[in-house]
Length: 150
Figure 1 (cartoon, rainbow, N blue to C red):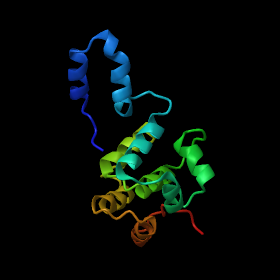
Figure 2: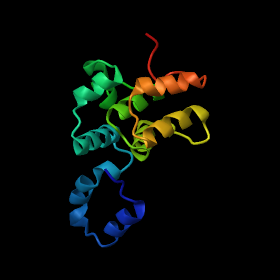
Figure 3: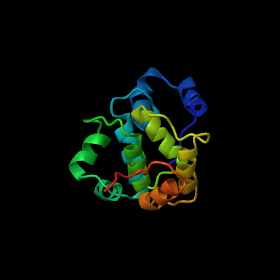
């Protein structure tokens, strides 16, 4: 799913009439900030576009369906950036999609100057979404794993 640039949204607003507001908000909800469920809508829209089921994401990310659902719906907040990254990896998110999801969740984006983040960025850019393979790369370079120790 592509992001709609702010300039494009501004162009739409420039010629919009007040009676078109509801349609605009509905059509562009996934691009708007500040919505209580923005993370959930964004996450779900990407999964829908990729035809990936939420239950598969939970399994792949190593969380229960109950817990994963509460995190994605933001009924329960997690401080674990790694968990959000694992959920995004399970949904085969691109780097841009992961960074947007992290931002919507209130977390810092993956950063090219952070050596641990670089390992994750490189994997994602090469479409390597297996968290255990990423863990191997992370631990080989002396960084903490994405997944919990078992």
